[in-house]
Image 1: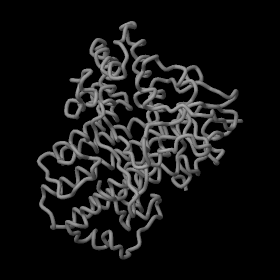
Image 2 (image 1 turned 90 degrees about the vertical axis):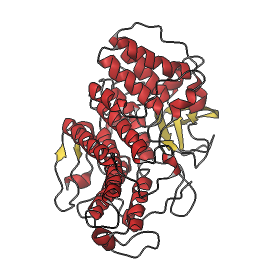
Image 3 (image 1 turned 90 degrees about the horizontal axis):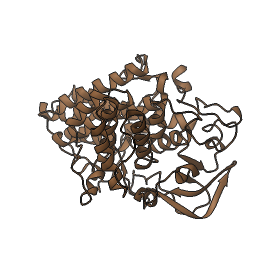
Image 4 (image 1 turned 60 degrees about the vertical axis):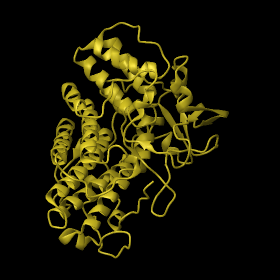
Length: 441
């Protein structure tokens, strides 16, 4: 496994208008002034490594904060805001200046900032060929778009600021619709840059199988399909899937193909960190608890239940909430986390088709997911409303605890008490996070 060694420029974790980067010596990374004026190939590659490493930052907060709002999980730890603010207890509202939004937001924009530094450096160096420059650009813009998509997921109708290349002259917040369009445009730009390009840098083991311009392009199209679905662009999603790594040729002997896809990797070496979503089994504090209704709604024989949820020896409770099961997604503290995998692409394929009226095609895709989970073929009504229910149900169990549920429910107007289990009377349900206070200053 490649060990990530963070660059001095990554020390600026929060993207603020006043954020500046001091020029200082770092034996593990390039000096900023040198990078921006005449970067060497080594310095450019270190920047690429830093971008890949930084995409991991803030992801745990993105998952647990959105997952709490969607009532797929609870965070039982020492911070009461996890069971008060996020769950709307006693008329609490989401704070625009606290960790559950500032962490994912600032981390995402740190990735964007680092990508912009690499892009600027490429315009001012002759140390690599034009084909290699395009390889760096396609990589940087893809990862930049991924980071921005996480911000837009969280902020919803509050929109997203895409143009942040000049800290002294930030672009406006785009509307949600404009934001999806801008992110897709950035992914399309990156895809074009990757065509015929060369990679002069090395990606970590998490991108095994996706570490050439051709295979990385398939990852780019997969992220574009996800973004298109979030923006309800169903025909666009199918178009993107055509050039992604979607594989529908799966049977009982090849279910492992569902899990193909790039990952975020972790380690214990200098400058690295462990998987922030790994929790020691059975511990009494700092645990991610499965909402009891998730367990109650499982289907007998579903293989995903034992793979994702671990029954506790002792049940646990906090702040009037209870749970008998905890997260079991990751076996060790250095287990990788999927960025996107074929299982999600099959579900995107099903969702796009059912919304376009291709119902039999959608059923076939959903049966791939059901069969891989040990379930029989779908035998319900083959009509759009019923298939949306089935699709959301399968997404709930295939993608539990991975930062999807809040946004899945929101685009179908189901982020409300008609569809969500509310375990405490009077709790409120939020549909989006506020723009951080720093952005309103």
